[in-house]
Amino acid sequence: MPFQEKSAIATLGALLLVYGAYFAIVGRWLAAGPVGEIAYQPLMLAAVAVLVIFAVVSQVLIAIVNPKEASAYDERDRLIDLRSERVGGYVLAVGVFFGLVLAMGEIEHFYIAQTLLLALVLAQISDESTKVFLYRRGR
Image (cartoon, rainbow, N blue to C red; front, side, top):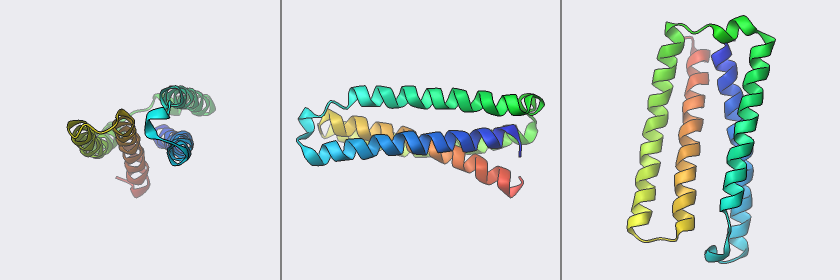
């Protein structure tokens, strides 16, 4: 299994774990009270910080296990990166469009922020999932 595939799996796991917890907590807050009273910003910043820490630690650990593999990057890896980033870009564009629609409708900032964050997370999940799929498919 190439370094880039291991990296994609680790990143995908971190994304699902961190943002799964984030959206579960925010969902409980949303069910418990009015939107205007939800202070989601500190939790959002904490989720980003935890994700960065998970990503850095996982990349370092994967590179320590096989350092030669970490520096190998060939044409196939470049093409897989391009295809997966394109998929993630499409998902992000759709999500940002929905965020803009909410902003034009003058919806609460809370919903706009959650929509944009969800778009970003889904785009990254799509990107990493596509990488894993393409590496597993053998192309």
